[in-house]
Image 1: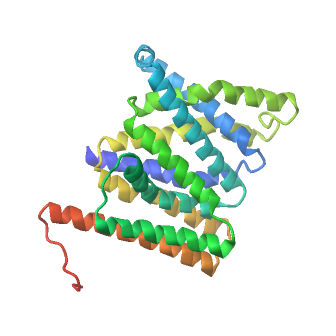
Image 2: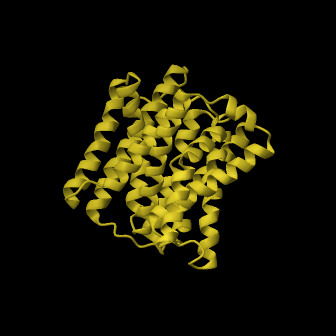
Length: 300
């Protein structure tokens, strides 16, 4: 069961890691229309899944004003995340987008401290400070904060925080989130068409199919991720999640030849060092609490 869960997790993270290839094929379409299509077609696909699995009545019974409010906020956060990511990919900022998903776990830890009053061990503060230094270095070097990375980390971190306490399953939750945005997204696409700026059916056949397929590439990895999360330990999921930004980073540098100067390498390196310290401390603590042998300082 756990092996199947690991395969689901790898499938989800690798799909997300390959997203730049998908959205790069739609560079000529405005990011707002891409997100609107992503919402519309995701909702239609998820409705078909719910209807074919005969869950519609259960979904309606689970709704109440508190749940609707929670998922409306989650929907707004994930839509901002999607828009920022697609804009970054179509404007040659894949490397910076990958930075956002590298620092997201540390941002989530910080949210746990600030919102849920979780206690950090003394050495857990060091990785947070190191990662913050990396972001500060990038800001000073380029004269502006890496806002794409910060928006992606903040919106996905806050989205994950809401989902942590949300009562619905991944399928129901994503269906409700896209459902709440469905009419505004559809209205936006109709408006764009009315003023002569609509891309759908006015671009290539490939672009039309890719816009429709945005629903599939949105829903499938999220459903794979939900299936994996119920089967795989959190520590394993935490390690596997770096497949996503690592693949994006390599695509940005090697495939799309985005600028990666020495100063940017230093900034990224500081953030990577913070992540390495975070996971090393976590692994050391888990082994110690389980009574397993841990290396002494100075051991090779």
